[in-house]
Image (tube, rainbow, N blue to C red; front, top):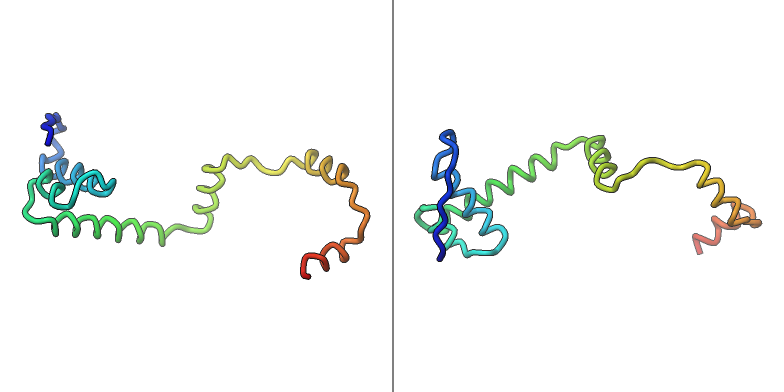
Length: 111
């Protein structure tokens, strides 16, 4: 195992930082739970597994408490959606030049 020296701000404890690093490496499946416990300086892999379970539970609660609007806004941001270009949509519609009645087209979808 490698040794790494990290300078951390005074407001963070060595234990907090060690546990955070250990959990991250364990979550990425780069080290085992036993190795994560060693990195964090705690006894037993159960500590790491319990901490991960708490993190997942909190993430789930955060996920569940999102509003529909926040989910929509997040998807718009992630996908870079900028809205419909009406002129482009009209051009594509005219280009297709569909002659069949709308009802016939719909009935073909349900067969």
